Image (cartoon, rainbow, N blue to C red; front, side):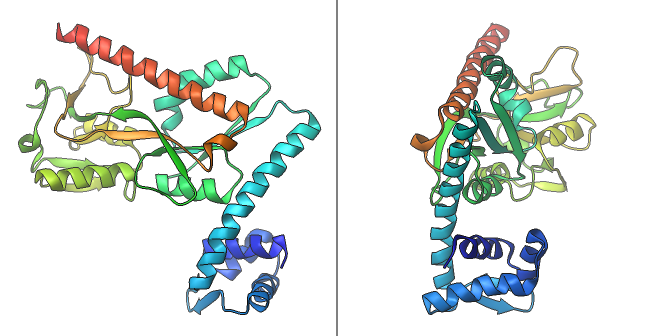
Length: 310
């Protein structure tokens, strides 16, 4: 049993296909199969079930996949850090997150961090959901993931940073635009612009709608929160979206209004890591910098809202 055998096996389990992994590794499907067969000979059990459309791990295969995935991820991270020490690099911070996260939560923090640590490589890998972030964090040598905080995930630590209130995005000429807040009754039977399918934010919102008895009518789904807001501004429907600190602010001349929906439980977002105490110093500093700037933005938003109310 070799490290390459385990790497290939984990890749096959993730892809569900021997041929896909062969293409990824630019080798033959037979070569990929040999890695798996060697593991099966040494363990004495079948690790994969073959189906017409691909393969899935057996119960024993899932056990090996989980152990190998965690071990390989930790080993890759250690090797990367050793290589940085050998080269004398200042280091790097690798983050996986959604496509609009940097703009919503990190823009000022990235500038502050870059000014303080100009020699540190700051890399972002885009994912389309918190689940994808968890998978990337487990499978690759990434440091941090920005996610919607939810239930426990094996091998992952989650740390909330900020709770996001929900707002209803409507055009300024909409009857609801001048309301100080809206309740469940006003949301029922609106034409909703839905949040990204399979996203944690949509699951959170759908569960809250169900608990409150809100009936949702929609034929529109979008790829991210900003697109939902844009379509609401174009008059194509109403969008209930989380409000990042300092974002989605109504102005007197704006064509769009953001009306609070206090009945909906806030959406918690923050960091996910494999092990917080195993982060490099620069990765921890970046995470703390983002958290600190989010906290400042929350305070500033609260002060602005209080001033407008008075």
